[in-house]
Image 1 (spheres, rainbow, N blue to C red):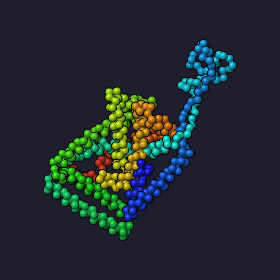
Image 2: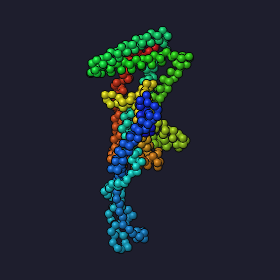
Image 3: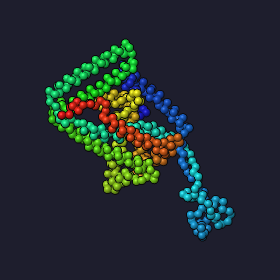
Image 4: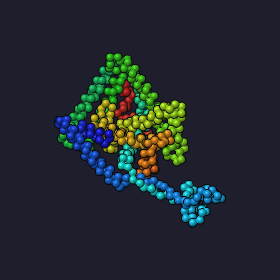
Length: 422
């Protein structure tokens, strides 16, 4: 999906609309084929050079002796049998070459070839982690916090028709002023060019457009325009209270996830299984309860990733690539961000497999992500040293500080009365 379906749809919608549908299909297929060939070449080279798993092992050695000699011996069974024990019938005891715990033996690296499919999963998961740690880190804070903030800034009552007309006229005058400013910028672009002052004015104009759109949205909330305004207002009020409920629940889920990482993944041996024990106890009460709770925590991560993609996007400091906004997202931007979320989902699966390894013990997913990907040559250090988890914690802290210090989004109003809270 992320490497073929979404790119095909993206190439198809980005093609020239004047050409026929068949030519757009052919063009999209050619671009997808070229993309697949380049990815296959890169993966093939990487697999040939680094497609191995490296397991740390301890080499044990022991001699041979008949059971009768061992049973008649006065030596404790914990003693090892020497490998070179002579030609007699009595075994020679000594050394600790068969003691993996107290023998103090050196560790060796057992290097074996990994299957190509599992190597692809490992590479895609690693790429997904680069997105997941940013999007999920931002979403764990922004998702519940924004819901609670939307409830706190909700409109308290409807306005009258005369107030609506007055405010709508003011918005119309503001929109007219923005259009005049845009015309001046276009004229300046043609005559002088895009200098530093032009770019600064352009950014300010975009900010004014965002403010205008948000003010129009808030105006529609406080003056429902439908066949049954009372019903529409009741639905609006219910939606805001549901946002408060989901926001409070989201705070609890985010805290539980952060505690699970801290108590179970960062510390070795783990302080407590925490959520693993919760799921097991719920299964003991009723088999479906543990599965439902497990699914809720996993799907909450995906919701945080989507929130982070919407909140942060692919921000390149100076500009944002394919930003998303509710009700105003281009199809190409939507497909691009869907591909990013699909990549981040692979990391979410690996995250859940490791965080809930006791609950998902002996499952196929645990064998892939826990027994092989953690030891892939070149990638194992990222997983064994918990680099991605520390980065996730850092993104959570940065997002929390940023949202608390900065406050609401920049396009929110600066005056209470401008929010139409009556």
